[in-house]
Length: 282
Image (cartoon, rainbow, N blue to C red; front, side, top):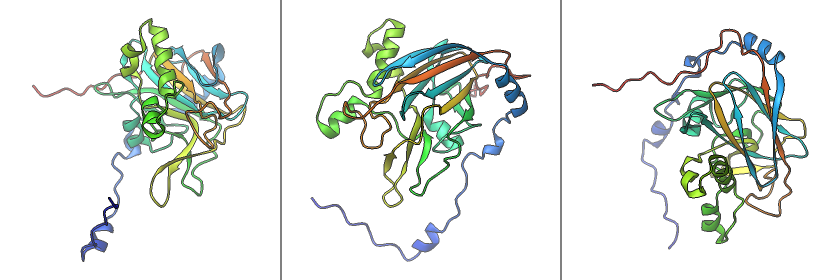
């Protein structure tokens, strides 16, 4: 069957498509961050723990509310898929769709990672991004996206027909299962859409298809966060390496990632994020 032909445009098509865009969620209505206090707190932090994430694997890490943590490129350009959960309730987890609606398709310093309903509170705030210079390139690509979901074995089989077990979804699931002492099937539903750390992505300018290109990250680059609640993080070092050619592959060159956790006095006046106080009508 041939691809259906689009219908002819109506006579008022120009008028319809000329409607002015309106920002759905104006960012100036979000809580204001105290950058002076955040900067002072960052200066007083000491590194207290680190977790190395091997290539094509995932690892769990814990961060207390008020602590800072960094994801660091240490050996070569490498993309990481990040899941975040409230440490006391793993069902409260990162809500990439709402984060995208509030902050845009790609995140950087000052953006916050929001949690799922009914909580809808910041889990973490980005406090430093060594790739903030990148912005958006001529292809429409940017870094640290919240538009991709995560590479997974189901889509891999759908498109390629093979069985591949080191997709980021698989890695995140295995790491969470090992941490909780349960099976992969018991925790798989908790694995969720990710923040694609260091990944360079966008939508093609012609067909608006999701694309990836070589990550601009280099050893020493990092993305830093302030934990707004007690966090359980899970990070996968993507089997696509820098995602310049393919993902879900044993062929791509891959490198480890480092998670560093820092402790010290939190920002002056800072308090852990409270869950939404919305109340359903009686």
